[in-house]
Structure formats: structure tokens, C-alpha cells
Image 1: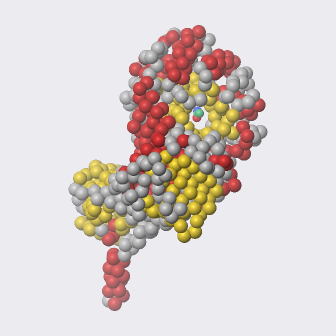
Image 2: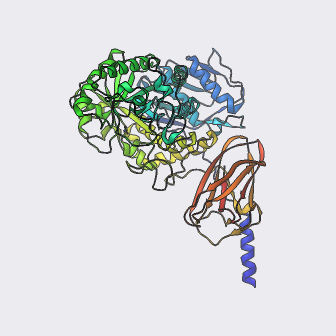
Length: 638
Ligand code: ACM
């Protein structure tokens, strides 16, 4: 009797316990990704951005960019002044070590000063300042602050000149808006090249005036048979200009002579047999080739490259050159020996996958080969380097963002292995390939192929947090390389991504700070039971839905308002998916989403939903929609 009463009291006490929100620790001066070269904190000094602050800038566009960013979330006027602002961006007085991309940041109790030799350097300094401000600075709506920055001096500059990301817009087409969002996100990590894979077997994504069917026919589908799409020249120029405003150079790729089915389907004359194959919506590689012995193919390539060069202020045209298994080695070399000079003749340098370093392919001035292999030695790379080429490092088993994180990742591929965050971070681009000196390494690039990547959320999930890991390899000195230090800094990016609405992978290798956690057992319940007869849940219990349609768990969430990601932790031991509807303030935001089986009632998974909350109190309700009830629910996090 007594022990039963005690048990009930313990249970009741447990119901009142809400897991304490683990406060995100205030940024220290070095809490930046990529980690800066030199950090000298000023002990006890902080700067707080106040409503009367002003901004001055020797570079108008960087000053405007910073002001726009800070005005959104602070609500302050932050006028641009010609006299020295509270935040001053100066193109003079920087430590000479900063070079053409680096910056010096000085934070005192009353001012923030970024000095650089170029607008690029100022922009990179602004990205560091952004990360030193609280995560709420990323909010699209006004937040209360305080907007505090740790005091001291940072002097910072990149290890490698080229720090790239690649998006495959051919396998699945991605809109201009999606690309702009990706540009904004990669800029935060000082990525300075975005390589767009504009053509492949499944799609041709850029208008070429002289060959209009490339876009209208070749662009008309994608993997899986969807509608595909293409960029008009105006849209493409808009992407190029938007990237430039973020100090990012677009590298356009037209993949050839293989990976060309979309072009071959658009123009019969590019095929050796003069017959256009059907459009292709599968995911095989290595079956297509331009007919390298036909003169019209060179007219075609020259026309395409000419129009592409006219849209490209950047230094590189990427000609692909990978997986040309349907082209003989001699024809491959002969083809490239005609195409490479077309690119240099247009005033651009050749970039290509490392296969273009094959013997028989001539050197080309300023050539860059992109290593995508899974080995640590490659004769095509060493051959190209011996001819003077530079190398961009994208080893597929380290840097490919389309590889699954683990065997249980739903999205992505695994032919190059699983790439958890520690694997993505754990290699040295300057000393990776035997026989290739670090002086030959131009930089790194993280490619995201999109055979399985359809939505913007898919892109975010695969890129974050691995893209910042690759960005740090490209920027930070090797002497700073330290997984434990990196993962602690990376964890602090999580709340920032939450505010930005980035649907990132919550890698269990990283201790992500929890912004707010609401335990299910302390929520309002209807027809659902609190249970403790399982393992692995947090708090004192979890909600075990009764077998009644309409059972719900309802949380009351206080928010500053705006785009927010909600994470619901649940377990579902059945193989049948158990759906829940999720309502925010009475509006259904997720309709009968399948909370997929986790394989075991003690195996918990987190589902992230992107929602918009109102300022103040929000009611969030998860409702079971089948007679079998819903999954077990552990907590909601914002
Ligand atoms: C590649 O992954 N085929 C470059």
C-alpha cells in the first residue's frame, strides 16, 4: 500500500519535471566556423549593438548587405553614415597577412571595425561578425536581443583560394529561388565558388540560343520522370549576379563527351547513328557519348561554350569529362584536345573532373582538375599536375554531400560509403593524394548530386552539417584541425540553423544545444497514456497513444514568432507507418505525415517540421489519425 502510494507520488513528481532548456552558451571570440587563423579575446570586453548604432563602409554593397541583415532581426534603423559608424568596414589598415580574401576584426566595448584589402575580405569579416552575434540575429522578424559580441581581435585568411560547393541541377531541377537560398547559406561559411552541374543524361538546364531544343526538349524531364526545367539566360544571369553579391563565383559545367543523353535526345545529328535516343529519367551512368568523330559536334560544343562564356564573369568553364565509358580512350583524348583550346580561346580556364588528366590529353593553360575518386593516389591527377594543372579536392568518400550519413539515412547514395560528419571533416586536402604536393592544391569542393535530392529541405539535410566541415578544411590552417574543437563549434551553429529554418541532420556525433524542449508527459493529453515501461526516452516518461483515433498531445510554446523548426521525437515499433496530423494554432501544418517505423518501440527518431509561429503563445497539437493510435511521443523541441 505504502509503496504503491510512493510510486504514484514519484510518478506525479515526475510529471511536473520539464527538462531544463540547455541554454546555448554565449559565443566566445573563436566560436566561428571555419575557425579563424588568429583569435585574441579581450577578457571581459563585450560590444552590444544598440538601437542608435550606425554603419559605415568603404564598400557600399557590403555595408548595405550588413545593414539589411542586422535590420531584419534587430528592428534598428542602422543608418549608413559617411563618418565612422559604430560598425565600420574599412578598406585600409588591415594586417597585411589578410591578403585578398582575409580580414581583421576588432571588437571593443563601443565599436566593431572590420578591415580588409578587398570587398571580398570585408564580406568574409561580416560573416564572422554574423556568427559572433546571437543566433536570433538570423531571424526574419524583429527579436528582442541583446545583440552582444565578444571583444578582441581576429586576423583571418584562407588556407586555399578555392572553397566550393556544387549543386547538380540536372538530375533534379532546382529553382532559382532554391539556388539563391543555397548561396546565402554557403556564404555564411566563406564558400566562394558555386559549381552548377547544368547538364547530364537526365536534363539540360540552360538556354542556348543556337541550339534551342537543348532546353525545351533536353530540359523537359528529370530523374523519375518529373517535369524538369531550365534557366533562361536572364534567370541564369540573375543567379550569377546574386552569387557575386555574396562574393561567390559561379562555375558552370556542361558535362561532355559522356553524360550527354539530354543533348543527344534533343539533336539527332549529335549521335553517330544520326538517331536521337529517348529522354532518360533513370540513374545509370556511362552509357551516352557525343559522336566525337562528327564535325557538327564541334560546331555544337563551340557554340554552347561561346554562349556559356558570355554568361560567365568567372575564370572557369567546367567541361565535365567524367565517366565517358561509351567513348574510346583515343576518341576521348582527341575530343578534349579540340575542346580545351575552345575554352582557353574564350579567355577562360578549363576545369574538369580529374579524368581529363588522362594520358593523351594535352596540357591546357590554367587547367584545374577536380579529384572525385575514392583512392589516395591517382595517375590522371599526377599526370595533369606534372603538366601544370592545379587540383580541387572532392574525394567522393569524404566530400560528396549526396552520400548517406549512415546506413539508416533515407536520402542519398552509398557507392562511395557512408559519410558521417567526422568522416567529412577527417582528412587533409593538402596531403591527401600521394605524389601531389600541397602547392598543387587550389582548394576543396563539396558536390551535391541530386539523383535522390528533390526538395530544398533535402538539400539542406545533406549539406548541413557536412558543408561547414568541408568549408573549414578549405579555409582554416591545418594546425587548427581538431575534431573535438570543431564539433563543439559546429554544435553552436545548430540554434542558428533553427532560426534560419535549415532542416539539418542532427548528427548524433554532435551535442546540439537544445533551444527549448517540451516533454510530452508535461503536455496536455487527450485519450493518451503516460508510460514509463520502455527505455531511451527523455524526462520521466513518454506518451503512449491509446488505441483511439483523435488522441492528441498538445504543447504550449512561447515564441518570438517567425519561421521555426519543430522537432518531434517519437518511436514507432511497427512496420506500418502510424500517421499523426500536426496543428499549429488550429491550422493543420502536416497532414497525416507518416512517422515512419523506427523498428522498435525503444528506438527513438526525431522528425523535423518547418513551421511559422506567431509571436507569443502557440498551441501545437499532434493528433493520432488511425484507430491504432499514433506513435509514442517523447518530446517537442523548438
Ligand atoms: C562524378 O561523380 N561522376 C564526378
